[in-house]
Image (cartoon, rainbow over all chains, first blue to last red; front, side, top):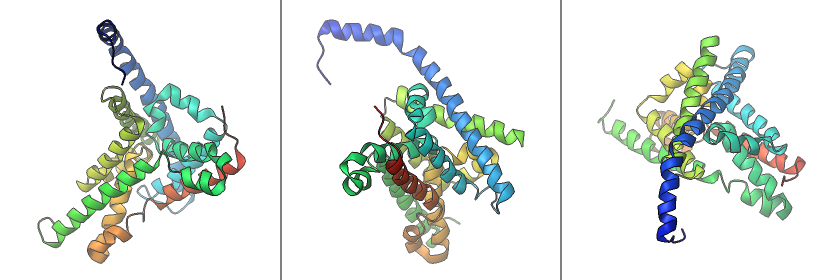
Length: 155
Length: 118
């Protein structure tokens, strides 16, 4: 961050004091309804899989996630998802469609650098951290839990 | 059927609000926010709290990225019950593979058929 003069700092404080509360609330409302609607669409897909395929409540999440990522591909490709992201913030980033969008937009963006180095190499540029931390957390938590069960500490 | 949609909306929306608060109030970047949520999902699964949430809210719990952390640990523990410690490694992607596979496949197809915007 750049160093600011005293006047600028004072101004920044003034801006923060007047600025902070309002956008947080509005951003949260936007995130809430957009994220909620995406999950409702996911619910419709889930019910579709439970009704027409042999999935249960617990297992239907997987195919639904794939279908949602397919929707994310179409919306990303036509440039709709980026605009949605500007409006909804976390509302479009937190659902799995945001994960799909991160992968797919990186793949499309780096297409000009070639299929192997561009698409293949950059696909997980943005979404990679989610996988890394998810797997690392699941590994260590799973390891600890398994060992605790193994030595009879927990049931 | 309608209560399912309602709770999917409320719970899914609430998880997004938590993400928005992490970004706005916690001043985290989107990548930090999503990583935090994934780890939270795994922690909730560790204490057995995520499965009840899925039963309750359906897609409201499976569509947000927290379910990714939950599914990773769930797959790992499923295998660990059968094969011991090594199952944590072999079962890691057992449940999540569909999401990752879909992202890779549709990302590849998307790169072939769409042109970059802007």
